[in-house]
Length: 295
Image (tube, rainbow, N blue to C red; front, top):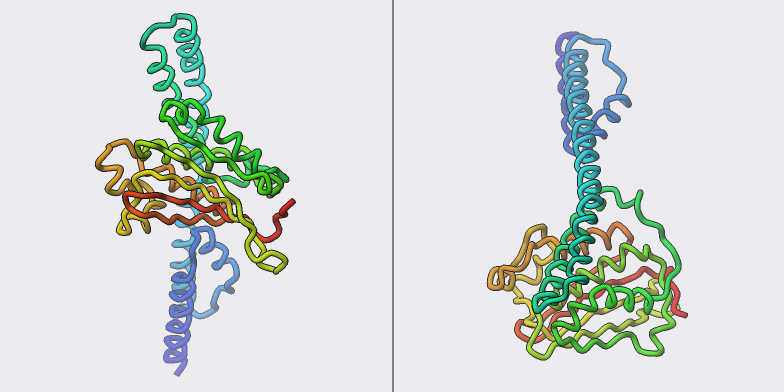
């Protein structure tokens, strides 16, 4: 009877352990779960407990190694970005001091390189955004204007007509991290430039949704009349590395920009959505939650 009882207890312990491990979404969670258990006094239970304890210890070591590797990767990228700024600045100076027929093209290529460097830095930092961003009250119009200025050369070179927020919308105030949001908007502008039409237009607009309710929020939309996205691709554009038909045809896309846009927006408590009609237009909408203010 005692043996039968021990077997039943062991099965019960194993079942609970299996369910708990299945529900655990973090490697650190396994270790936490083990510390919450009391070690059984019967022999079979001790065996099961010791086995699970070894798994927890291994998981914790793997988690620590992974965290260390990620930290080292981030530090390397940040150092690389810092170091590469020096030759880029020198190249800009050389182009400025030695004007030629190729100067304009060289400046454009340097600007592209700087954008890729910026993207690498934000990608590395996206794993620990909470250490890098500061939420402040900021004018939505200021964010839009600064983002457009950061891409002015590309927009002018591509012949864009840009429509900023209307006079009424310029009073819109939100709470966000200025640096991160300008980067996000810059990625969207880059896409508009990359997939532009022959007569390109870029329009920014803001809308207050469900005003006065508990679900009040502000939607910032960025619309362009570029080549658009097929319905087969539109649901996947935020996936890591996804380029779709447009990227494959033009061979200009890394599939990272929109992934970063969604990642950074979500970590700042914002939602992002996309709508598009192939061959006609694309609209990205970033929604700021209800605690934001209009004016």
